[in-house]
Length: 114
Image (cartoon, rainbow, N blue to C red):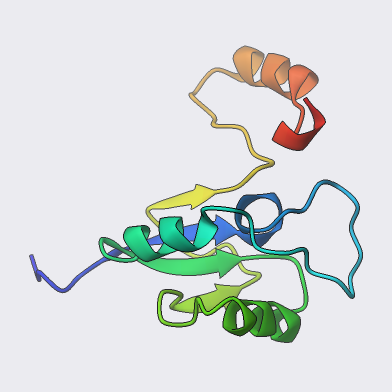
């Protein structure tokens, strides 16, 4: 295997990298979450990092540059691309059991709503 190859990790912007708490405003991307820059920096040593967001990509790119993350981020996308894993604040891990999945869906709350 090529030692330069890095698996891709898609990381959601809102609620993972910034201080989003459910009050969506298309014109304002919340401030960077404490610890996010160090997390991204460290993760980028082993993985290719792509930000995954439904926000405007130009505004998201500005947020990346304003927070001095550009050297750690390989791309920003709103497309679910092939990746090793996805980090998101609003997701459920499917483990092959639909009944269990239904129960998880019924109980789901974003971390900032708990």
